[in-house]
Image (cartoon, rainbow, N blue to C red; front, side, top):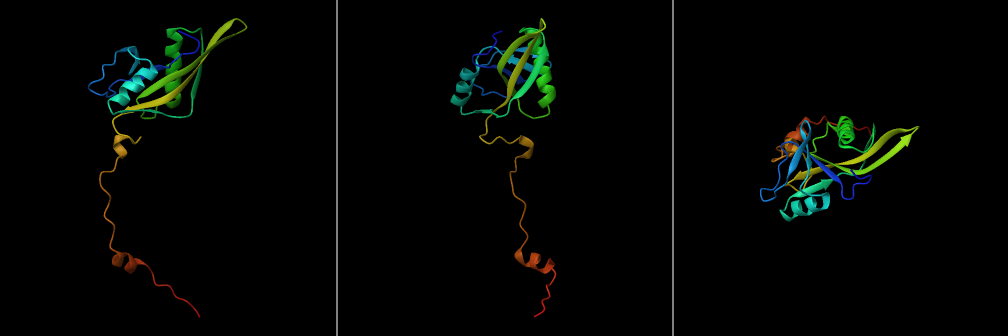
Length: 155
């Protein structure tokens, strides 16, 4: 694994929908998460957008520091730590954007920087459960006026 991923390492949550015409190869990485092996970040983004889908990038980095060198085992530990920090969001992908490996007193450790991503067909970044398909009826003006107490004024 390189010290600085040239074009990001993409992980997707199991069950993430993809455009039907887009073949994406993934490998199991940790429970419920898969690593994309067929595309790098820029190729995947272009392919998704060509299918009129959207690949959102959320600002704000997520960092995790893990003991060990720059290996797949350490990457697994880092992904678990990142998900522990931001695993409650409903986004379906994560991109590792930077890896910095160092040693202190001969002990290796790596710091991983990640960003949340979302692959979806709609342009708005709104979870399915909060999409409003109809608006509640607005009460008539007369009934609202009757409910208001009368104001008394002294002049």
